[in-house]
Each structure stands twice: as structure tokens, then as C-alpha cells.
Image (cartoon, rainbow, N blue to C red):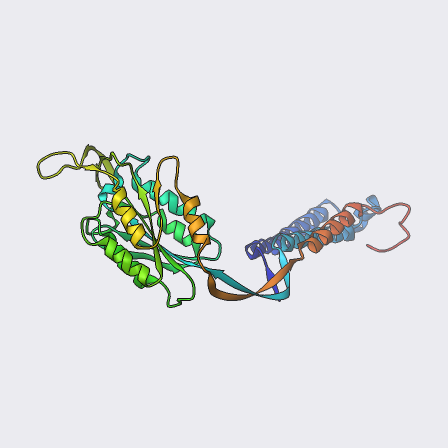
Length: 343
């Protein structure tokens, strides 16, 4: 099997016909100028060491060297072996709270951004595991189905904001139920649902949902984002932060507090662990310890060809051609004038 590692560089080969055209144009103009200067027979007698053939050979060698360099930087590769890779891992689904309370700034820059940073760092540490993403506020929504495409997951993660969902509130139970339905059909490996929230659940019975998940073999871990003393919730308009805070019906500033008790209860019911994230501690090490304890299963099997690089041969050929071009003189050598190689 054969391929180019950087096939886009082959477009540079268009320079070859361009240089040929330019060379021919200058050759015609030079010949026309010499004809105006005098008769070719007389000019050849005035320049007995002149050898037009040498210019052509030097140009051809330089052009061949350029072609070899272009092919070299395109990284020609030959497949030598076929390998079958079996990827074993676990399935993780992250449920991220995107309610307005996650905009509180008791953790900088705010709870939601801190949670997104934690997820990004978590994804960076995954190898063969499959990961999915759910966002929730007053209801839960699938944003990324379980996948091993970590790059796309991180790119999509960067676009998540508090206004991504139409219904505000905090329905942790709905997120857990949606997570249970979002795992793949395989049940040979452990599965885990990671809920990242400030714990202010107002909509449903999240503990009962976590207990139901545990009965189906799904562990529910919780990561609390925020501080127990809480913080006011900034008001945003059109994506711009306003100089105001969210107020209740009585005009009092709403203080959003981390609900440790709720999140500990959810984790206990879901046979998982509760981790409090702060400005200096994400809690990823504890979470990864739990993930490493999980049973893995074969996620997928891939067959690929092991390609060997061959660019060095073309660079070597280009170097040889350039050296040859350098040692070919533009004029005839007096000592080799009897050898009629170039005419």
C-alpha cells in the first residue's frame, strides 16, 4: 500500500511546468537577442567555450531536484504491515449543569467555566474510553452521544453556555434518567454517570434516580462546583454581563450555595463518590481512581496499515542532482574539450 503523509504539498508540482515555460521563454528571447547581435556562426567563433547544451542539462537537473524535494516533503509512505487493534475501555457520560446558578463567581471565572475546564482536563486523560455529554437545567438534553472522538467533544464543550437550554431550573433527576438511556447496548463493562453541578436541585427526586441507576449497574458520581457560603448570580443580557445580580420576587439578591448534602446523597445512592471542586482542586485524581477500578470491555476493533516513511530517498536524490548540477560548468572545460558530451 502506498500513500502520501502530506499529500497537499503535491500541489507544488505545478511549479514544474511554470518553470519550464519561463525557461523556454527566456531561451527564445536570448536566441532572438543573439540573432540581432550578429550571425550565429560569428558569435560561436567569438565564444568558442560556450555550450548551450550545458544550460539545458543544468536546468533539467535542477528541475528534477525540485520535483524530488516536493515529493519528499509530501512524505511518501509504503504500508508494510497490517495490525488489528482492540480498544478496551469504559463508557462515561457527563451531565453538566448549565442553569443560571452556575454563573455564580464564588469560583473563578465562574462555576460553569470551571466545570468546563474540569471536563476538558478529564477528556485529555482518557485513552480508549467512550464519553458522552448531557446538559441540563430545568430539563436534560443530549449534546454529544457516546463517542471516542475526544477532539470534537472538546470543541463542542467550548460552545456550551447557560443560555443553551430553553428551560431554567435544576433537574438532576432528569439528567440521570436521560443518562441511563444514553449508554450503549453493551453491558459487559462498568458504566459511570458523572454529574457536575452546584447541587441546587428544585425539580425532582435525584436521589431516587441515582438509586435506580445503581440497580442497572451504572455508578453515579457527583462533582460539586461552588462554595457552601455561596455567591450572587450575575445577570447577562445578549451574552454580556450586566452590572446587576439576579433577584427574587421580593427584590432580594439571590445567593446560590453549593449543596454538599444533596450531592453526597446522590453519590451514595448511586454507588459513586462525591468530589468537591474548588479554585485550586478539581478532584480529577479521585475521580480517575474510581474510573480505573471499573471493568473494561472491547469497544471496537480496527485494522490499519503500519506505514514506513520513504521521504529520505527523495531528499537524497535531490541532493545528488543538485551536486551534479553544481559541478557542471556553464562553459566547456579546456581539458575536457575533446569529450563531446554536451555538443
